[in-house]
Image (cartoon, rainbow, N blue to C red; front, side, top):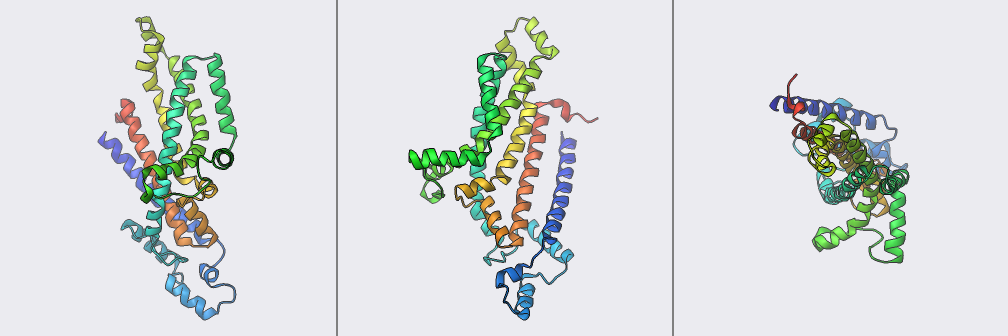
Length: 315
């Protein structure tokens, strides 16, 4: 197990180095000048040069990349070009919205999808199975922002059970804060639940067709006992893969939902920074999101090893 973890940690480190280089180079070739964007088209060349020097934009790309990576290693993400405040403080203010939103959506997705997938697989070919698969097809086909706008129309405008947008803040209490995140979380969770349900059903059906399942049935176990004792655990590996990918998506891919509901999260911060050409904010937040995605995949790999001991054996 230790050797397996070391190999995964080395892979994680290489992935982070490559990702940081790609992010920096991608933003480096983007046309435009942040200093000119801040001062406007009528700014004097001397003023532009002074601002570029102040922001460190007059230095070479290699030096700026080294400073950026070195700063991140000690928790210093630089200073925002637009707001002139530390990027780490801006991220800290926004992550307390984005992370609970992603966890809330993932919990809803998992609580709905796994029982639905098991229920459909246990009744393969029945009306229940066809109904669940029909709903999941609808959930996969419809984008989450459409769900978001539909729920705003129904639950915020017509029924007035929720606000149409904004975040109450954790200072107001856990209840009001989670109430503010409920509609966005449901909008994020529904399409993901549809995907996870289909994967759960497919994986469980594949496992139920294996030889060891037939052996368990031959020994006298009922279909329900075979499903819960033997089939379910072996069917969890592809499901864990999808859950890990979904959590990564929910953290990094909620830009549209956060803008629909006017949530002050990381997605909205990236959108605002792109609009203002605040590149240091963009690259730092994107790098943080990449780090979150890679770490989630690392945890999923370790979970694989816990579920399937064969993965821990050295070849």
